[in-house]
Amino acid sequence: MTDETPGTPALSKVPAITLGFWIIKVLATTLGETGGDTVSMSWLGETTPEAGQAAVNGYLVGTAIFGVALVLLVWLQIRARSFNPWLYWATIIASTTCGTTLADFADRSLGIGYPGGSLLLLALVLLSLFTWHRALGTIDVNTVSTPRAEAFYWITITFSQTLGTALGDWVADAGPGYGGGALLFGAALAILAILYFATRVSHVALFWAAFILTRPLGATVGDFLDKPMAKGGLEFSRPLASVVLAMIILGLIMLLPQRPGSHPGNSKAIA
Image (cartoon, rainbow, N blue to C red):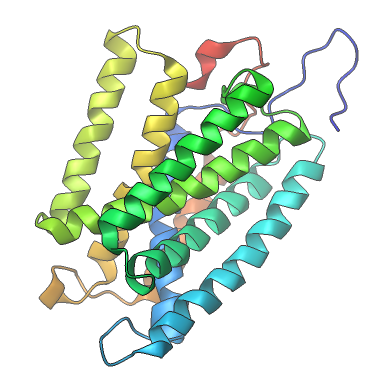
């Protein structure tokens, strides 16, 4: 429950959508890729043909670890009486690391490949948004101020993070490579920014499109940092890259203004 009083609109439990939000979001999704790969691949089993069942187990154990952390953080987020930037971004990072390991399991261990995994996860994202809209009448992130809205928000977020991982791997594997994939998704986000400033396209739709696309951008950047040079990466240490990204995120949360989104009646503030 929220602590709103009659006649006073509840504050959103998620941050205002600013340039700083998008910078931290991209870095968090990159950390999700390197952090997820650190646990499921470096520590629990590489994804090579020789790894066999060890790779599958690595994905499952990694997903279980991050899944438990995600459920706990979402529970704390819903119980919180107001926006807490540290709790919010910790939950985002948990969702993106869980999304990394879950997408890798779906793509590589279920036999459906990157296209099948991406299409399945896209369907889940759309279903989540549709159900949310049918239940509450809006998917505006500024309405995320009640437990029910938060539950829909975090379910959608987790599906979108998982979709982004699968989509990033699909595009990178299709030919552009990790660096080319990062440029492609960066260009797509630039187009969305132009649509926001130059057209009357729904800001709600643009927000969710951008939120989804930041995940494959982070996934391809993360893979570019830690994949072997023979596969088009820079072969940086996954744990080291994860620690550096985490430190940068912590610094930005302290330096950049962190405030909740405006009240639910102000729909234009979401993008």
